[in-house]
Amino acid sequence: MKAIAAFAVAATLSVSALAETPTFANAQEAIKFRQATLKELQQNFKRVADMANGRAAFDAGVAESSAARAAELIKQPWVGFGPGTEGGKADSDIWKEQDKFKAAASRAEGEVAKVAAAAKTGNLDAIKAAVGNAGASCKACHDAFRN
Ligand code: HEC
Image (cartoon, rainbow, N blue to C red; front, top):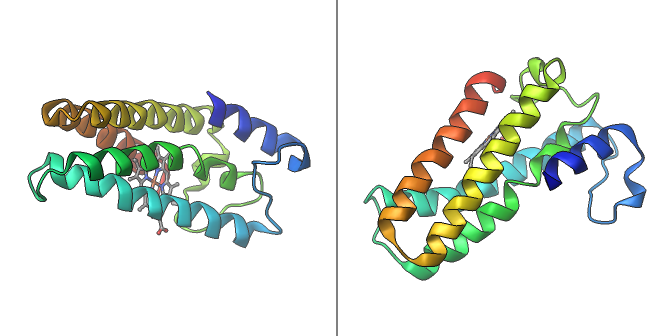
């Protein structure tokens, strides 16, 4: 819910009141920011997913720190999709179906938080289940909103 609130505020107000919210000089900056955070998200998520899928040896410490970082990062890209920032591989439907886009972001945020919680327990089966759901939440948004 926090990311959604930040998104809504950033979309309507000058963001100077929110010290933790990045500001962008232009659309290109916003696009670069969201792509960079999504890329770093992917790197951290994949590290956990590879362990869950048996493509990498399970290391509970690395899984925990990577999942925790992914849970932080999944909250960040959305301020980079403000008004007038169409471009990159973002589908223009994002700006026509804001509620749907925000709901997809919120769902993914919840699912990645569950991966972080599972990784904290160190239980690989719990991690596997959570990674599957989180991956599906990434894909659902990509199918709908990424070109
Ligand atoms: C609410 C929608 C949404 C969710 C949820 C989402 N993504 Fe994306 N993702 C996008 C959009 C839109 C783009 C294209 C952004 C652009 O090019 O401006 C993108 C781009 C990316 C990219 C390419 C970044 C680059 O280098 O240009 C990666 C990697 C990525 N997402 C990974 C993920 C992962 C991993 C998850 C889940 C943990 C996820 N995304 C969840 C919408 C989403």
